[in-house]
Length: 93
Image (cartoon, rainbow, N blue to C red; front, side, top):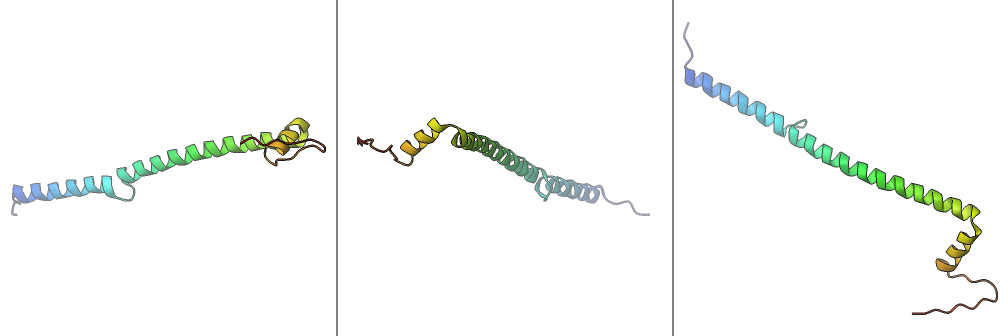
């Protein structure tokens, strides 16, 4: 039986190691892909938190618009530019 030369064995081993390391980093399930997914997850979680806060704020405003007559009047005056009958509105620019 012939013994393989150490150069061929070392070269083959080096190629296998380089291949495994490149797969570890650059494959679909590699470290770089994992890092990008974690970054995307963090961004999405921040967006979800902002949307939850916005929903909460809109629910509070909805409750105010159902029950609070003073708030309804304020919204009508500020956003809808409404006035009570007989009331004069002065616009200052």
